[in-house]
Length: 528
Figure 1: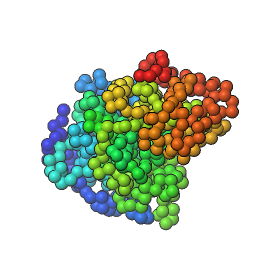
Figure 2: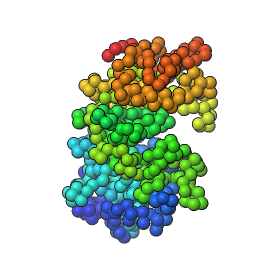
Figure 3: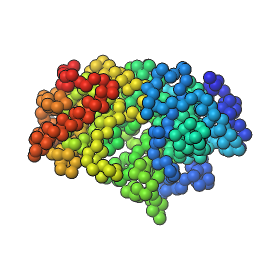
Figure 4: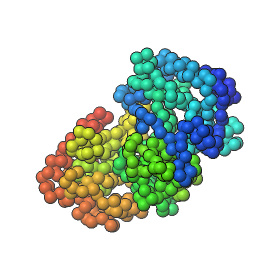
């Protein structure tokens, strides 16, 4: 194991094999990084103060290019397969040597930072990049250190980031020219061949997902907020389910929008910033996020600019996955400490394009584990080539690409915490009602907001429920601001037999997916 901790920075670099560097920039301020990014033509100024950067071929994560080093100390822990693909220690060492040669004669940027607001469970992260704008991304996204913390800082994990360095798959054993290699024992992460900045933050999220369960902390791909009375709510949901929109509530304090832990001390944010999607972003729809796109230090990623250097958030020329990165304090109602107590409510958001699931239902702990491990949403016809009808999508724990351990371990930990803390768990469908996509209609956003409000103010927890016949879900009989017939999805279909057939088919898909982790539920509605 390389002795990385408690070394002077230049000796640290020497031990990493990063020598003959033309210049080393340590902990530059955002203004300095922006000045370098602009002068080196890595990025361009945007009206209002942000910068915009373009990532070329890779405009999103490359999950097929992510590998974990298979070595004796950690091999037995990892759930190897399509998500967690192995690479040998010798291959890792060979690629590291090639990267060391690549950095010869280059200038680099070092950013020391933290992951995890709870000091009991945080780790020190050192990010080494050869692009100023990627170092600014690390400044935005990780938790920032003050001068006193920097004086004694020693990184637990180090990222070496070289987007213009490419591997040769035939020689290096990678899937393509891009790679994210995680060596858990050396506590070293290598990223190359892709300019997409999200790989930097997600690599550390994967590390946290490996480390924290052994300390009774559930890592979560979710957003979280806290009410005026201190009540904490956690929102899980895959892309397109409304996670960001529904958790962004001006009357509540934002703990964070993407990565959290749930431990003995409560819920805490891993990050110090937000990495929000900007496709169709508007001041009417998401005013707080829109405001950040006018602020100095924000990075717009792959956003098209008009001739006046104004962003056009409707333009998908480069990608639909346009993004903005900014420090979380750019959101007016963001928490200063990134922490809250034990959650009172956990909300699973899904966009069910089959029109089967109710707008809201209360889950037992057993049902919560079932829906957590399935991590369901649905793609709709027309969103991708060849998709002509709703398509079920499952991502275990609502974040399968980032889970190194067997997903059942995360599910068991969730169930344990729900039982210990007596947490209310809800399934909220933001998708279709009155029929599947193409026949029915999208559930009114005003109804969904009313449902979330009724969950958070405690109304629905006191409301009687009725159990539906297929998933055994417990549906509230009423909700303020929502028509009663909307709450019962079968009642909204003109053809009730068609609803039954569709529900049976969706249930089959759920059970087939769930069988990878458990046997299908014997008693779906059992009061446990």
